[in-house]
Length: 187
Image 1 (cartoon, rainbow, N blue to C red):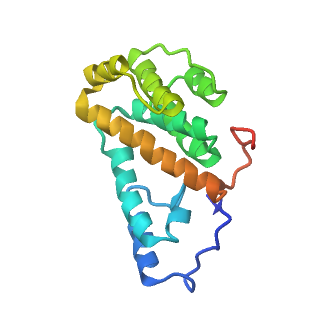
Image 2 (cartoon, rainbow, N blue to C red):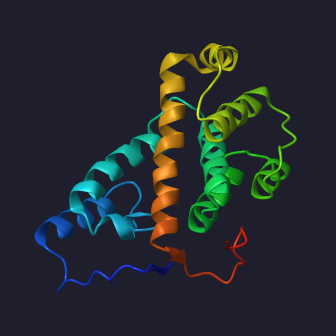
């Protein structure tokens, strides 16, 4: 899929050795493409290298079920109105078992009709972080009871990493070439 941004396109002639190395690392890793923020990050090889390693862990290595991590990602994409982030992760979230009604409510910025308590908890934790910039003690305790301390650390890491992704995609107007309508109205 073709991806565009407002950054200067990186051609072989314009890339330095570090950019080529990071590009090769990204393309030969589990992602296999420059979808998402990587098109922008390759402009700064050190950022790209660090971010793609963190992203690989947040996407593929946490102890959370894929369904829950994708819920956290979609909540983040909806909060930031990140078009490409939503377009990339919405089908993954569906395949991971997130209900259509939950996905659509997130997209519309409405509280979803959760059938599962663990999903409701991820939503409450993320909503608290985004809206209040904190997690109250009682909610924190619920999170630790459900996911353990390491799971809570990883969940907050997912929120933080995908907020970075969303900001990157929004700031550099990264767009996927698609005939599908954008999930969010542009501000």
